Length: 185
Image 1 (tube, rainbow, N blue to C red):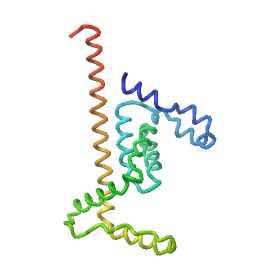
Image 2 (image 1 turned 180 degrees about the vertical axis):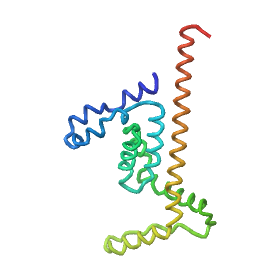
Image 3 (image 1 turned 45 degrees about the vertical axis):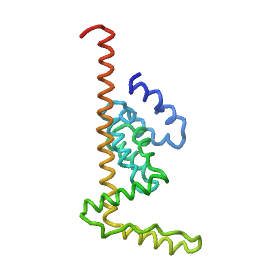
Image 4 (image 1 turned 90 degrees about the vertical axis):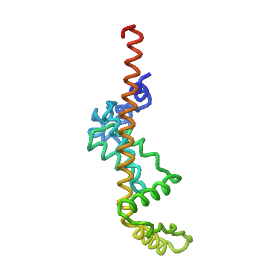
C-alpha cells in the first residue's frame, strides 16, 4: 500500500465536517481550498516542517500557528496540525531546556548562565508567583528567544528532509515492484 493511500484512508474528508460543523461553516471558504488537503510530496513535507516548527511555540498557540502557516503556504492542514502533537506536558520542559542550551551555544554564552528552577506556586500568592514566573522567563531571556526558533527550524528542516527521503524510497520501491510484475529489466 502506498503512503498516499494510507494517508487518504486516515485523513478526514473536508466536505464532511466543514458542512456539518456550525463552528467551521464560516471558515469553509478558507479551509475548503484543495491545497490544504493535498497529498503531494512537497506539500506534506512542508506541512511536517511547519508542524514541527509550530510545536515549540508557547502554550496554546501551537496549533493556531500551524493552521495559520498552513493557510499561508497552502500546505496540508491536517498533517501540519498533527505534527504539533509531539509537545505535551512531559516533553515541553526538556525541549525548552534543549532550546535554552542551543540558544546559549548560538549566542556564545559559556556556562555562566544557569537555568534557574521554575517558581513553585504556593496556592495563595498568585500575583507574586506570576511576577516570579516573569522574572524566571526574563532571566532566561535571549538564550530562549534565540534557541526556541532555532530548535524549531532544526526540527522542521529535519522533518522535511526525512519525509522527502522516505517518500522517494517508497516511490522507488513501488517502481521496482511494478518492474518485477511486468518482468522487464
